[in-house]
Length: 126
Image 1 (cartoon, rainbow, N blue to C red):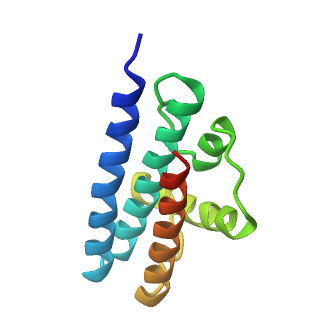
Image 2: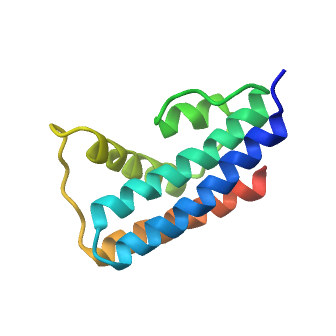
């Protein structure tokens, strides 16, 4: 049997660290990388939810919508739109033949801040 608390704590702690990394990267003008890490911290907090809801280890997926659905999380329209936007940046960082337009730093900062809001909301739901 797995230690559910240990798994949830792992995902929460590593998500928190990735928020700092995303922030530093975007502040330094590394927008693509910062948005990749924004996706990553949302993915990790969603994996904590998955573990809590399903009493099982988190799946090896990067699909935020899948994790939301499997965790039975209901998001408002604004948060759902954010998830769909941020989801695109995990592909940009992983696959060389996938390319999307990288937003200017001001827009990336807004996406980061909205991602942090969603993260805090999700954290408070655990």
